[in-house]
Length: 115
Image 1: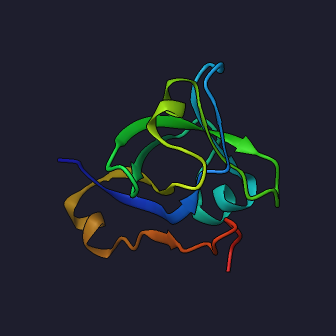
Image 2: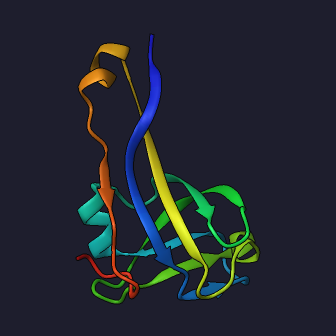
Protein backbone atom coordinates (compact mmCIF):
# COMPACT_ATOMS: atom_id res chain seq x y z
CA UNK A 1 0.00 0.00 0.00
CA UNK A 2 1.12 3.55 -0.75
CA UNK A 3 0.15 6.65 1.21
CA UNK A 4 0.63 10.30 0.33
CA UNK A 5 2.71 12.41 2.70
CA UNK A 6 4.16 15.91 2.69
CA UNK A 7 7.33 16.03 0.61
CA UNK A 8 8.16 19.71 0.92
CA UNK A 9 6.66 23.01 2.02
CA UNK A 10 7.61 26.59 1.18
CA UNK A 11 5.98 28.59 3.97
CA UNK A 12 4.62 32.15 3.79
CA UNK A 13 6.00 33.38 0.50
CA UNK A 14 4.35 36.49 -0.92
CA UNK A 15 2.72 36.84 -4.31
CA UNK A 16 4.78 39.27 -6.39
CA UNK A 17 2.81 39.13 -9.63
CA UNK A 18 -0.37 37.83 -11.22
CA UNK A 19 -0.88 37.21 -14.93
CA UNK A 20 -4.40 36.22 -15.92
CA UNK A 21 -3.65 35.93 -19.66
CA UNK A 22 -1.33 32.95 -19.28
CA UNK A 23 -1.79 29.22 -19.74
CA UNK A 24 -1.74 28.59 -15.99
CA UNK A 25 0.63 27.62 -13.18
CA UNK A 26 2.70 29.22 -10.45
CA UNK A 27 6.07 30.78 -11.20
CA UNK A 28 8.56 30.27 -8.36
CA UNK A 29 12.09 31.67 -8.00
CA UNK A 30 14.42 28.84 -8.99
CA UNK A 31 16.39 29.24 -5.73
CA UNK A 32 13.28 28.29 -3.75
CA UNK A 33 12.46 25.41 -6.09
CA UNK A 34 15.97 24.00 -5.76
CA UNK A 35 16.16 24.48 -1.98
CA UNK A 36 12.86 22.64 -1.51
CA UNK A 37 13.98 19.78 -3.78
CA UNK A 38 11.21 20.43 -6.31
CA UNK A 39 11.29 20.38 -10.11
CA UNK A 40 9.66 22.24 -12.99
CA UNK A 41 6.16 21.03 -13.85
CA UNK A 42 5.72 19.30 -10.48
CA UNK A 43 2.19 19.43 -9.08
CA UNK A 44 1.76 21.67 -6.04
CA UNK A 45 -1.01 22.46 -3.59
CA UNK A 46 -1.27 26.17 -2.82
CA UNK A 47 -2.89 27.65 0.29
CA UNK A 48 -3.55 31.39 0.37
CA UNK A 49 -3.35 32.48 4.02
CA UNK A 50 -5.10 35.77 3.27
CA UNK A 51 -8.32 34.46 1.74
CA UNK A 52 -8.37 30.73 2.54
CA UNK A 53 -8.21 29.60 -1.10
CA UNK A 54 -6.71 26.17 -1.81
CA UNK A 55 -5.87 25.03 -5.33
CA UNK A 56 -3.56 22.78 -7.30
CA UNK A 57 -1.33 23.78 -10.19
CA UNK A 58 2.20 23.10 -11.41
CA UNK A 59 5.57 24.80 -11.08
CA UNK A 60 7.18 27.03 -13.69
CA UNK A 61 10.74 28.06 -12.89
CA UNK A 62 11.19 31.75 -12.23
CA UNK A 63 14.35 33.76 -12.58
CA UNK A 64 16.94 32.80 -9.97
CA UNK A 65 17.34 35.35 -7.14
CA UNK A 66 14.27 37.29 -8.33
CA UNK A 67 12.02 36.42 -5.39
CA UNK A 68 9.20 35.87 -7.89
CA UNK A 69 6.04 34.11 -6.83
CA UNK A 70 3.59 34.55 -9.67
CA UNK A 71 0.07 33.23 -10.08
CA UNK A 72 -0.73 32.64 -13.73
CA UNK A 73 -3.89 31.90 -15.71
CA UNK A 74 -6.96 31.00 -13.67
CA UNK A 75 -4.77 30.77 -10.55
CA UNK A 76 -4.28 34.54 -10.81
CA UNK A 77 -7.84 34.89 -9.52
CA UNK A 78 -6.92 33.02 -6.32
CA UNK A 79 -4.76 35.75 -4.81
CA UNK A 80 -3.47 39.30 -4.95
CA UNK A 81 0.01 40.74 -4.90
CA UNK A 82 1.23 40.67 -1.31
CA UNK A 83 -0.92 37.70 -0.21
CA UNK A 84 0.99 35.04 1.74
CA UNK A 85 1.02 31.51 0.34
CA UNK A 86 2.06 28.08 1.52
CA UNK A 87 3.26 25.89 -1.36
CA UNK A 88 3.22 22.14 -0.70
CA UNK A 89 4.13 18.98 -2.57
CA UNK A 90 3.37 15.42 -1.62
CA UNK A 91 5.03 12.07 -2.33
CA UNK A 92 3.72 8.55 -2.33
CA UNK A 93 5.51 5.99 -0.19
CA UNK A 94 4.87 2.98 1.91
CA UNK A 95 3.75 3.48 5.51
CA UNK A 96 7.14 2.17 6.63
CA UNK A 97 8.99 4.73 4.48
CA UNK A 98 6.66 7.46 5.74
CA UNK A 99 7.58 6.74 9.37
CA UNK A 100 11.15 7.90 8.78
CA UNK A 101 10.51 10.52 6.08
CA UNK A 102 11.31 14.11 7.02
CA UNK A 103 9.74 16.75 4.76
CA UNK A 104 11.73 19.75 3.60
CA UNK A 105 10.37 22.95 5.14
CA UNK A 106 11.52 26.34 3.87
CA UNK A 107 10.78 29.59 5.67
CA UNK A 108 11.86 32.40 3.30
CA UNK A 109 12.04 36.01 4.41
CA UNK A 110 9.44 38.66 3.51
CA UNK A 111 11.10 39.16 0.10
CA UNK A 112 10.89 35.44 -0.77
CA UNK A 113 14.62 34.95 -0.22
CA UNK A 114 16.11 31.93 1.51
CA UNK A 115 17.23 32.73 5.04
